[in-house]
Amino acid sequence: MTLAAVDDIRTLIRLAPLLGFARRLSAATDTKQRNAVVGEAMKWLAAQSKSKLDDEFVGHVSAILNTAEGAALVRWCISRAAELETPR
Image (cartoon, rainbow, N blue to C red; front, side):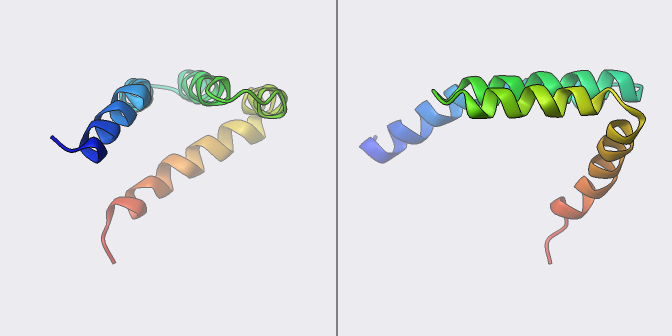
């Protein structure tokens, strides 16, 4: 196994929690659950860096997700996700 392959495996292992967030997001049955999962995923991603700026940003975005406009944004993102899976 090459060093590059080992690095790729390490990256997959490190980012594996994102698969759990994606699974929970797809299983969520209402907007409130989806918003909670999106907020948790963002917090996890922000925690991967040493910057405090992204932590503050995520706090603001999480607060927005708990509003009607935030719920609409999450619904829109989910509705558009299918387009990302379709090759052009």
